[in-house]
Image (tube, rainbow, N blue to C red; front, side):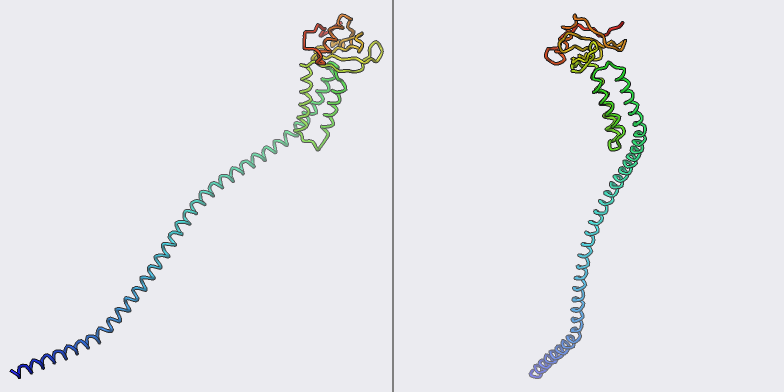
Length: 256
């Protein structure tokens, strides 16, 4: 019995010794493996960190790429619009150049036209009823001086010519009274002229003793008898706005 117990103790001891020895050997084998595993894990962690960093950079670059793409698309649309605007401006410039060329042609043509208009106006005044002769002739002389001026634009010259024509047109539908000197019976007398449109031009001396009318057919002045004195005086007062407009009994045309 004692022998068996001693053997058992010896076996246990041997077993423990063997186990310890095996464990020690296993530790010697496992330590390098564990170290290698740790290195692999550390390398994997570092690699994952690099991957995460690269992924973040890729996401940032992707966002930048999308932003640049949007800006590029906007610039393409903007450039297309600018090209259209530039083309429209080029078309407008071409139209303006063509208009300038046309203006130059018109200017060369309109100057002789204005000169003919002034000549025609002067001829008309000479053939018309001789009212306000000095004023009307001065207007024509002013137009001729204007035509010779280089510092006045053709548009302004044309406006002034048309203005003179308008004044002459207005004479035909107005009544007017003005003072002047007239030869009456071989003497220069102060008189009042009464113009009724272009149908009658009458004078009356300041003392209302003498009056006369322009005879369109003969182109001369002809005396009126005293029966027209009241009507002429009335017409003068109406023209001076001293009386309200009213009917007048006056000759409008005298013939031989």
